[in-house]
Image (tube, rainbow, N blue to C red; front, side):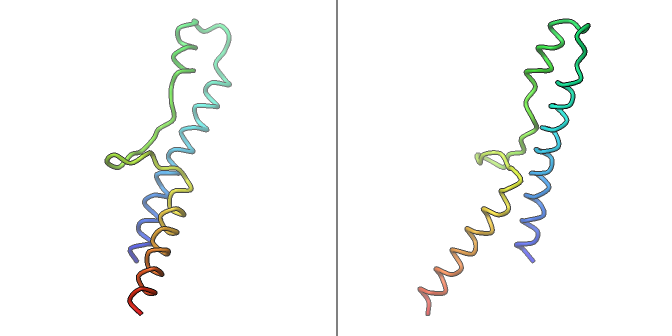
Length: 83
């Protein structure tokens, strides 16, 4: 249950990052040539949305897989040591 919640939460954060990246690419592509140079520079300088928790790096779409792999490895290590 807990792993499903972690996967869902981090997965949604990854979707936010990917969606903002695609949206910015589309906006940059559709900026018309008759707009001022300053506006085009501002649009080019905008970064995608990065959701962070504490001092950790931002979350991508692959983050839930990394957490799942880490938790699985630690569980197997614990079971092997305790057995």
